[in-house]
Image (tube, rainbow, N blue to C red; front, side, top):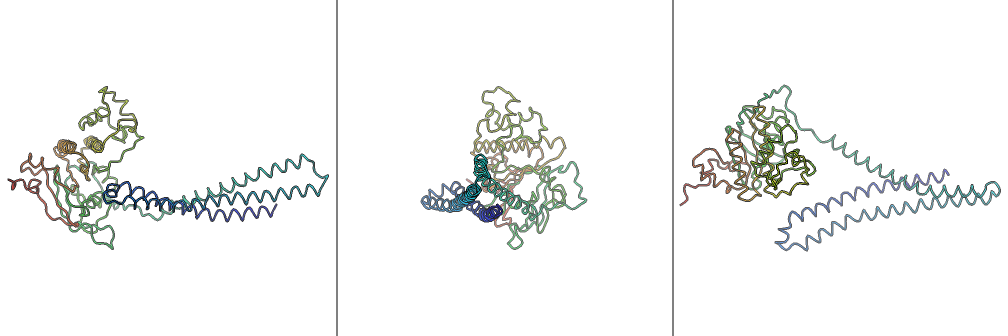
Length: 428
């Protein structure tokens, strides 16, 4: 028996060390498959346009074949473990029968049968033990990597001790950017260079530029997702570098992105008002303002509680434009929250209208003007085109309501009023 235990221990050590490495290889190879699939889905238009379908298929199949190699070897290793344990149990059974034959009369047939039965059961028990131990080692390895990630990843820098933020901050929403320079890495060139902006309370500022011009970088700097190397960003005279991150992201800004985050299993009420502090009639008014209540309640039954408490996945599917209106509804409800504390959070729009039709864009701009700018909320919008502002420029005349800043390679190229940028006055 000691010899058998030693054999099982050696087998387990060999199997565990090898299977752990194969499992890591399998995970790494699977990530390449998933990346290939996602890249093909996102770039399917370009792939079909340039006739790269066959190349994409071959690339996917190559990644799939490589991902199956460690899985196949791992399966072979498991079969090897089964064979080795079967041989060990077979050796124990042979030893048992040999002893029974040579020690005739010392045991009964029932005792021998029970011993053989125990030996056969021990085979499956040993296999389950080794497999479970291996799975435990793999799970502990995953936990160890998570702990390492937690230990090695630096926490976001907090504001210096003693920074005092008034309860009503921001009370106006005026923004002042002075000599702002931002880099993603100290070894790289600055993504933003010497940016100077002044945004008054209730003003709508449009930051326009091509891809890579620094628009999104400026947005990240506002949220302190990137730290500034030189310069400062002030909101109502308070430097954001001295403000706690929680206050910046919860009280200072309302964000509407190009791809709003929705929880399909969460209720309609939770997706719109996660804190659950607003009554249903306020949520209903916000949905009616954006035109989404008719979408969720096509029969106009006005079963407020039933619809608001339903999971989002059980309600009618929303199109891309309706999803953007949903995010804007959430922003309207944030304004309702801020009215209680008498604060004026700033609305940040990150390509929020880039994937919607003209009618939806017009609806969104009307809501932004009525709910935000007309009520003293500053609006900072990131976009790569100004065509959606043509109607605003025609109707507002020389109103300073909307100003435009053109960015290129991280620097301000020009800035002015929307009607001047679109140059309507010089058109015949």
